[in-house]
Image (tube, rainbow, N blue to C red):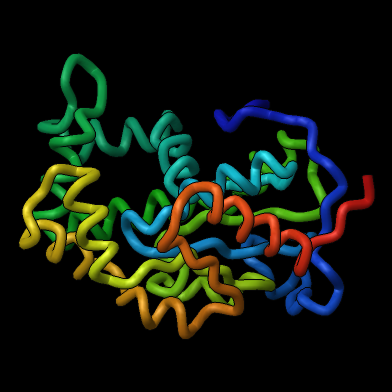
Length: 227
């Protein structure tokens, strides 16, 4: 069964032995192969780094994409229809209304997170298997530290830009005010703290070409390619 993330032919890429810190019993979702946690702040360029890693042949599984897959699950759709019918329009979930509802009611937000997260392990492992069960996975997860997932990955990688740059990029990208950008950043751990908690930093203060070089440096330093 295919779960919505495009299947591709994976190269035999591994995390170097000295960076492997977990086993299947302590790794996220019981994954049997090394797992890199990729994180960063809003507008830091994490998605760009994820794309560069994908282009190198690494399987990148995005937490946000997994949630979108889970929302296609009939059990989830029926749960929302039964409990929050006001966010259903013509039989389809109106995600804008659902986000507003969850934002304004912590109990609803907690209930939704509980049922969604209960489906994450199965969905994650299905995506992994659907992509040929490669020897290495990168988990692209914005809230790696906030959700306490950092002790379930072998290597923690942070895409970093200073907060001032982060604010400017977010304002330019989304067309929001500084106050709105500040409010968005307040929902995440401070980027400096994420940087300090990470094993490896990919600095994204420059241009796309330099970012590509830095990702290539990371691959050379930490990964092996058996092809």
